Length: 279
Image 1 (spheres, rainbow, N blue to C red):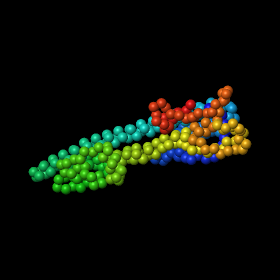
Image 2: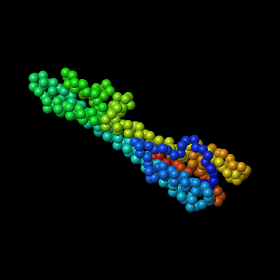
Image 3: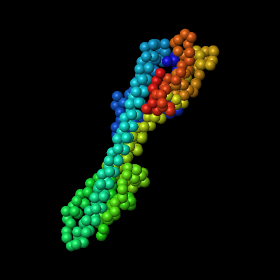
Image 4: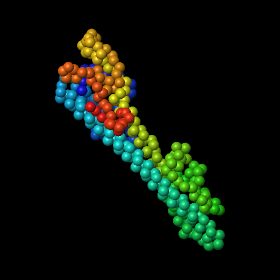
């Protein structure tokens, strides 16, 4: 950790996110609190930059912050995967239902064509149609071939014919506005809207490490690449905590300039919520 006492004046992007998913906001154990602890540790260290204890506290909070990013990113990724799996399960259930309804259409028409009643089969078809309507919003019309069932004009059942349903078809229907209700719609919205909003953590993590930041370096400081102390405070733009850390010097003898404070796990392409780590 390098040594310098500065004052932050502006950040090009917000360093603290406002999380809200279906009315929920993380409590004191969430990332918001971890970020707050991280900034407080830096603030305390700025009052005594030579403090070994203060430096250790900053490092501990940085590790906690990186770990919180990593764990939250994994949880979001797992949640997205679970929702995708559940959508696939529902599409399989829908296929069974629409195929059965199409078969019932054929059987009801055959039996009633012979002059007999098919009330039990009609009850089965109605029950399946009700169950299908809980999974997705459907429109049902009865004609001479039986039930015609559609989603936003796209046929699922047309008399004896059933259209295969896939997770991709359901996602496309939600994107087009044809799918507007039911269990699957809720899953798709949760995955593609709410989870993705949370996954802006990637941008936050990278901004924290490398986002454009303006600081005031106090008079008497010697900036890297210069030999004379500053005669007056100077505004300097740096790239995030990493750039800020490079303005300082180690306590070693001879002192060396700082290096990146945040980096990323081996194998990653750059800093994201999943890959961020610290020195």
